[in-house]
Length: 292
Image 1 (spheres, rainbow, N blue to C red):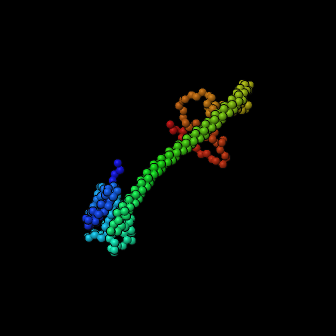
Image 2: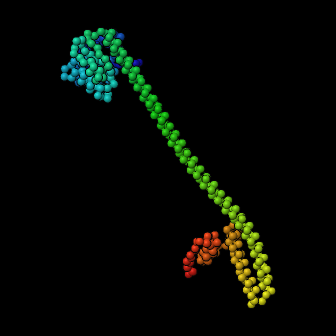
Image 3: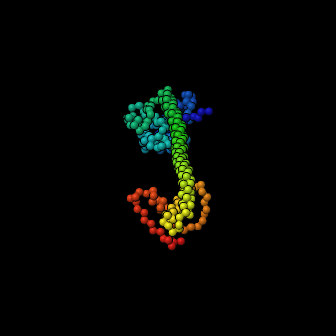
């Protein structure tokens, strides 16, 4: 069942309240809950109570607090500012209608009252209020729906950003892994090339060392050719050491882990480094031979 609409009638004359109440009673096809107030203070108290008021019929000329002041206070209050107010005056009273409209009144009716006029004005403004409340409710619902949609969109945007960041990081990792793989392939190719060169070079060294040793057996030990052959063999052995280093780089030779003094390794490394550097670069070494 539809709840009755509540109308507050404000007039310092109780008879005037009864006249308006009779015009809005069920006998005159009204279906309202009527509330009366005989002063401005009482009117404000009734309007601000927990029971919601749908329309106010407000007498302008009242002692202590006139209708304009009541209207001003009602429109300043957040709880009552949306209640439509119809100002009630007596025909011939000096009333500033413009002031009432400026303060927020929606209409004026004058005594002597016409029941049809009163009923029509009340129904019209209640219908307008109902329509306005309905629109506000729709606006609130749509605003809430839009806010929910916006929140979902913001969440989707954040999720998409997170996905894009994760994809970007994945691409970076895959790119880095691809670089490492290419580098590994390059090192593997270099190692294979070095191994092939080392094997070929080693075969050449075997021939040089073998024939040098055979030649040493054919000449006197104290002769100059013997000493030359010794230099050839020493150079060949250094070449063999270089081959072993190349094979160690290509990881094709057996590795024996033994303790050693690092000084000799550093010197050999500097010799290898010297070959790959321009002649304009000078290498200065300071290696402590007594260091542990």
